[in-house]
Length: 458
Image (cartoon, rainbow, N blue to C red):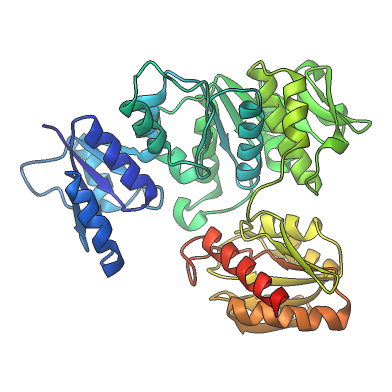
């Protein structure tokens, strides 16, 4: 029996392990964590015949080398163990690539980009599913991809999905070098994850690799970086723009754009823009990309319009929570970098109370700070980045900030200040990762929502 190592005991790692076990592999999951909370999970998986090694760093010193190594998205692709594995010609892939091996008989839509991936993926899935297609979403949204593969393995293998809708991060793309979507979408491109990918050029190349392997390629013509590279690099692609067809980088017959408050796709009127309820031009751009994918997949415009009219938005991305004393509380926990947080501020009314901070990232914060100076009556800072953010705001001659460290203090303080300055909005838009105080951006957003609801009840 061939042996597979799974690196990482997260949702995707567990899904990969169960998938391989179902397919007849001997499976070992390795994770450096030692928390007692993991013991019941360890026992459950071992009862299913999957070995779980906690507090463990794998090595390749033994004679019994694994035939396959599967890496969870959070594990860096360049750690010495994985470099050595590839040098030894051990098949080393990401969890998404493993899913692709089982599911490549179904066409995929692969959505990548620095920002906008999650909303675009949710829109694509809503349209495809609204058209009565069996088209689950996976990757960074919905299921772990290997959960879909496992479900198919456990059923008749002929019962394929109509489409797989996959949100593909750079981490997943880096370790999925055969994944070849039928339709590839690239939403935006700005500096992010440079602590892992080192250079902007390397980050771009990882994103671009997914599009090169896609049969149809759809790009955001309004993104400055993609617009610039598209002039010479993506000549045969489909392009989208919210600025009218004159901003397309292709013939209008291959473009999706807004004209006179209508969405036009490939030369055909699709739906009036007022059917779409999400705020902000960035969300209109996400809509256009989703419609491009739908039309390329042959979905009728009636089904598209029906799905869009009932689309409620995405949790943790400009998600309305409640209103207290005329102040809207908005959860934008998914804004984990400066560009996303800038868009968050652009999309809300002013004056706003902004809650920001967490585990800081590299990047250019100048446009974000400019939006703060324009829209925010007060900034409440939490997490590891609070001191650094305070210094950056002070240096930019913005002094209306407070360091409160934790979310509960920030939410309580936000209402007090909001009443004083007659704020329209309290916006959680952190411009940071969540891992200093939370398990994930979802965990952070859920905490914010619970605190807001408690505040309303009090």
